Image (cartoon, rainbow, N blue to C red; front, side):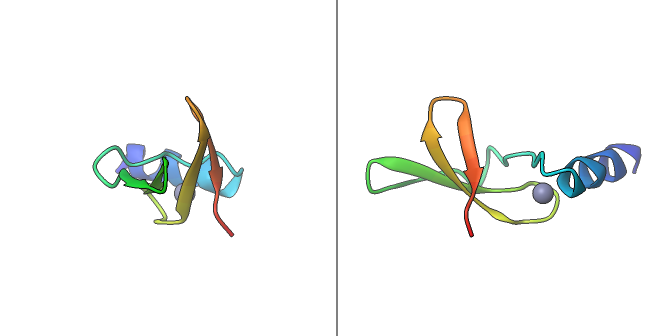
Length: 53
Ligand SMILES: [Zn+2]
């Protein structure tokens, strides 16, 4: 519960928690989504992910 809440707080600050289980390869890079709010995320480089808009 606390973990879920703190994750959501990070989401509101723009720091999303990438879900490891939702990672999938897409056109030479990877896509995933936030483990808490489900926002789509795109991999720019190793350890560098952005929120897809
Ligand atoms: Zn999020």
